[in-house]
Length: 472
Ligand SMILES: Cc1ncc(COP(=O)(O)O)c(C=O)c1O
Image (tube, rainbow, N blue to C red; front, side, top):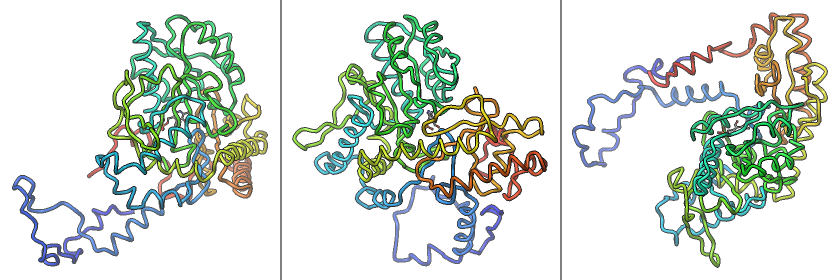
């Protein structure tokens, strides 16, 4: 497909701003801002529309198909939330409007803090962080300030070998040392944990259900091991879809959590944003939260700054429209509805696992929560890798699952169907995966050359990342 610059040809755009808007006489701009020729494509309106509509058709998203990308919770985002967030009252809301004139939105933010406290079992929330990783950094920074206050020098963060890459990244950004512990049967092994936890331990970061989809059954023992040495427990809430409304990290003993509103609470995400990663903490960490926190006094809502606040982590109040869409989602479903979300997500993940485990067996086979991790290992003997399988699934009209993560599963295929998919969709995905397993044995070339149905087959992803070109 041609780039818009390539379609551009001088004189194609017949619309002349100067002539058409002769009634409008703007103040002349200072000379330094003026250019003789603006370097924008010269293209007619219809060509412009066709160009962007065609481009949008090349895209694959939740709105045009099944998107079982594990660890990403790519659920359907109800359009009513988009419509409401697009309303002028919200869209044109200026963050510097006075508090007296912002009471409606302030109330929404305050209620959101309350909902998240109730959902997670934490005592206080900040809505500021803009993503999960940003939430991790904020939560750890809050904990760091707490230890600093206590004059305790702790620098060791413990991570299970199944942890998400952002966990070591945010720890390293704070200058903390990362210690990885080996999992036992896909879960944290309390005996191994005991060996590494000491007075230098800052925290253990854990997602529960973990990235294999397993509930960390020893979570209370884990908490005790850390507590005995004065260390804290951090909850990576990206996998909350696995037990929202059923269990709460606060009750399991977690001291700080972040949530990914753009996953569990159904706001569109992908491609780098926008997101929202609120952070919740237990009472003893409350004073360190970033500001502003929204308070309520007799139904008058105002901002406050916690006494030992780490400062601001984002301009103004956070990604308000993302928070708003998540708020609407919670209000629409209610707490019972949220519970049902998890129940169906868990049912769907187990359904896929049971149907496919014979064809893509992994070393772990246990009841999962919201996602399951299978493996393409047995197909190595045909010269086929998981990467090839994931490319072939595109020919069947599906987005590929996450691959090669978590690292502890060889040739991992991480599938998260979410609750928004029905049985027909799951069945057609299962059928395609089974067909692929047969193709591998009978016609491996078709798999190795896949995808055969897309314009671009196998881009060099490393090159694209390392030599990113976003302009020409
Ligand atoms: C388990 C887990 N933790 C943390 C993150 C980071 O979240 P974000 O992408 O919003 O920064 C993700 C994202 O995929 C995740 O799956």
